[in-house]
Length: 255
Image (cartoon, rainbow, N blue to C red; front, side, top):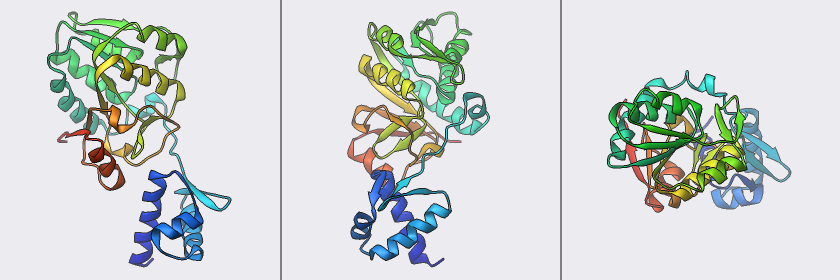
């Protein structure tokens, strides 16, 4: 494959990351090539399972999110480094809201080790369990419909419960970090994260580089609603541009 074609394929993926569904004519105009060239490129990308062809255009494929137990096995060093970087940034906080996910559980472990005499409100049983090792931390579990694969409660009851509290920080994971904002594979989880953001003075997203430029079902915020992103690698391309435009503080954890 020629360098020109490789660069064009990358540019198509970048465009579909920003605008998840685009027509052939739009891509041709943006990349300044013929529609015939774009059609050939889209067919090749579809054969690689990177995109899905639609009538007259293309759609970026969404990666399936593994269940929680499988996610615990991946990127262990990266998640530990992110947690080590994130916890000191919460110094001085008295009340935290923490969302579900494997990276937030790692952050909760560091919080249990480094912080005392705080209150944590969570809907995630994994988060509550690791915090229980520090008896000075008060843990409040949000009620709701239990999602076994995620180990967390979701639903309208969960969101209503959270609306009665305020926090210094919301600490949230993500299934994807796209230029349009962080997102989760579960719509119900995204609803809970939205509520946590509304109830908190500051919001931190913790996610490793494998989530960069992916798409997930439910975006729970735009980047201008997020104060900090703690990750293990500097973003680039459209994601970096979006984070810079919305003045998100990026903290890179050393692995």
